[in-house]
Amino acid sequence: MCSSDLALYGPDFDIAIVTAPGEAVGTLEAYVASAHAGFITGKLILTAGIDAERLTSMQLRAAKREYMESTTVKSTLAPADLATALTLPIQAISFVPTVKLDAEAVTARFGAAARHVAVNDHQTHLLYPAKGLDVIVDTRGKPLLQYVAPRDFARLQAPLDAIDTAPAQ
Image (cartoon, rainbow, N blue to C red; front, side):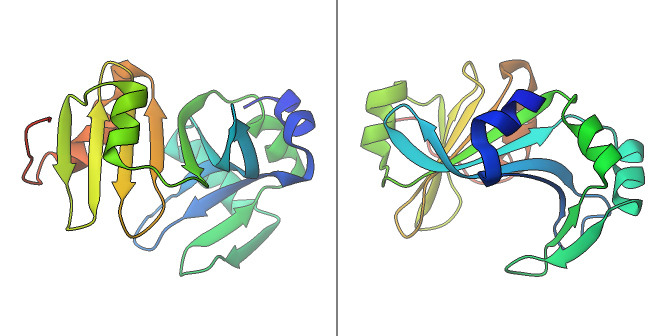
C-alpha cells in the first residue's frame, strides 16, 4: 500500500483491520468499493503484509470498532497507524468483478487451469499457481479473483487441498 493509493481511489479507499469470527487477529485490508481493472469494474481488497504482533498493537489502538454486515469486526486505524499502514507491502489482492464470469470466460482469458477444485455444487476454484491466481467461479453468486505472488501460492491452495478435486479440463 502506498500514500498515492489514497489519491488514486479518493474517498472510496478505506483501510482497516478486518477480523472474522474465530480469528484472534484479523487482516489489515484496504478496500476500494469501485475499482477499475481495464474495462471491468468491481470491488478491490488489498491485504497488507504485517506480522501478528504489530497488527495486534494496531488493533488495540484502533480509533473505532464496528460490526460489518455479519459478525465480522472492522477496526478503524488510529491516525499514526494509518500512516504506517501506507508503507506496508501488499501481500494479496482480491477483486470481485461486477460482471458474471463462468469457467469458459476465465479459461479464455487465463488459459487452462492447473487444477479445478469444486467446493460445493455451485463454486469451483480454478487454480493458476504459476500466475499466483485463484479464480472462484460461482454459478449462484459473484466471482472472486485472488492473487498472491506465485512463490506464495501455497497460502491460497492449502485450504483447498483437503477437498476432493477434479482434474483440469
